[in-house]
Amino acid sequence: MSDVVLLRGVGKQYEPAGPPALADVDLTVGAGEAVAVMGPSGSGKSTLLNLIAGLDRPTGGEVGVAGTVLNKLSEKALARFRRDNIGIVFQFFHLLEDLTARDNVLVPAQLVGRSRQEARKRADELLDSLGLAARANAYPARLSGGERQRVAVARALINQPALLLADEPTGAVDAAAGAQIMRILQDLSRSGQTILLVTHDPDLAHRCATRTVEVRDGRLSEAVPA
Image (tube, rainbow, N blue to C red):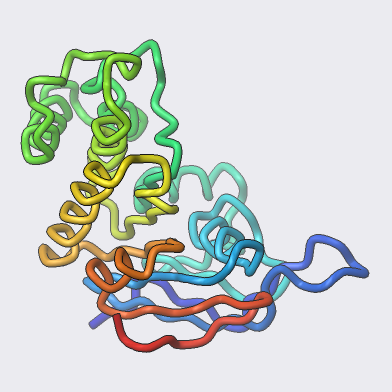
């Protein structure tokens, strides 16, 4: 099994005189694994996710994703790499309000230059698989929180990323929608999608992850298997 995520001795320091946000973190995520990252607020979970997403840079160590060391890339190359290899599902959706559900899903495909016909076909297949075929032409303001998050999942998957990052994906939806998102993540994991999931919810970690790690005070440890 090849490694999709490989962190070695990764540290992140925001304030020179303050405690590190992350300290000497090693983490390996193999292809097809679903790993949950848990820990209290302020423990370093979001910092870890941002480093793996290429949204932030470490102050020490190496961050490798899909065989590429992100530290070594320029900002432009990093943006291209993230666009081509990483899908991100945010807690608060971040949909474009002036685009329909389908057009929100299409944005990443347009950025990589896929043909409109090919991209639209995949977008419609994703929306259909997520129970949103009838909502493809609806604008975000007309969608429920659960529907918005499912659109965000489709958008994250449109370019068939090597790695799917999910940051508290059930944190901004009600219990019923959260259960839907949980089932989607379970299905993706069973299909072989590599997932790194940041969550406060032990039930989500238990149901959707094959392995759980814990971050406390910037340090990473293996938790009881999910």
